Image: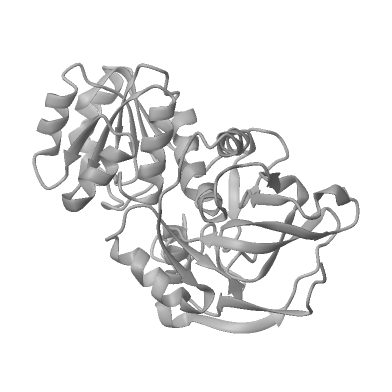
Length: 349
């Protein structure tokens, strides 16, 4: 398969609204030593795309600063962390048998080489991503899923949302038979957490709202909590013995309301703050009950390997809410920001 010299890509040259997304023609990147070139079949959208574009992450020393995922962004930047596609060529030192294989790219940039390394950067933020016809990636970060029965759209839905959900589940040490609470359950990470926790044999309580409640139940929740009503009261009714693990992407007031609902030794895992960054809670509910509050950013290489095992066996079935062509990236991000959908939004370069 010949590789053209140029490709279409959507990139940002500054932080801002959807108007900063520009469709342009750029050179196809050449894979360096240890890298592969992937022809993108599908790229899924994430909240990280919105927040990176907006510069909404802040910095430790200045929470109000415009910033990418882990610091200033080198513009121009091609967005897009979640890529499924086929390897079309490889750089020096890479096994050529990868050429032609269907792959999913682990978008994390890690701080070390080992299986438990921490993500400190992200494709689409700290390096160019998949809002393009081609993207390069380290060969050790591409996972062969050629035999998976999942579609390319479903595979593209996995890396960030399902990787983040699996990272939360692993860090929260969720065990079979435990009761788990999932907040924001109709979103990408929340729906992934519902599906994976159910597959792990947990009893799943999921918080959502309105017309999305049925979809969350269909995804595997044993009980759904309507966030428009008394959330704590509904949880007590659904789980009178308490919660073993909370998988929370909302934070805000939910933490102070929810911590007293943990069982002895319970774990509250936070991977997002859609409900607000500042959190207050009664610290006695923490130390008197040997509870833990755990921060969780994405996944480790070991977690991602577990996720790809699930993908090869189709043990989770990602829900694709809508698809867009690459030239409609701004409309796709606006659709994501409205949060009216259940599942993932995917683009086709």
